[in-house]
Length: 60
Length: 185
Image (spheres, rainbow over the protein chains, first blue to last red):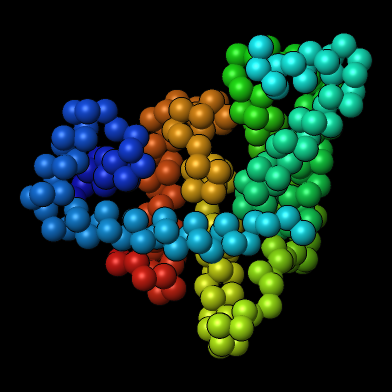
């Protein structure tokens, strides 16, 4: 997977892609196991880091 | 006219108490973003306070081209950047804390609590190691939940730059945290 593809998948995860990009991302995910692992990894990273950071941002 | 615009107009008409409502409305949200940009609670409080002072002083220059909070965030991020530069110059040894997240709950064992605290500490440290540009984008997206367009507006960069910075920030963070979080390399 090259940089434009991983950048596309990162934006896809955020729902910040055009219709054409969405189709391209879904095509990539259907065909490429590495792309699927990449998106799963980013999703886990986002979930875990959000959970860590939000818990600690309460004003004291 | 929306509520913010009314409060701004009232402030500019001399009713400075109206600005207090804007402070009340946005201070928590601003703090929750800034604390991750500057990396500690004490500095974040200073930055938020300074940002509101600057916003009050510059309010007449606010044209309403963007939402008030977008404008306010931009000020706060500029203040935060200045603050960080000052901090670096001073080479302060102080590592301020973000708060300990409270005591362990009854259902949580002390060892599990320590493990979670360690994980949070490492996430904060990894974010702190990101370049300033990457960190701002990541925090605005992940903590504040801003869309790319709003982030672009706040940071005054193209949407494409937001997208690529966020991608790079995530890759760097993933690399830094692969041992800590359940993230595949």
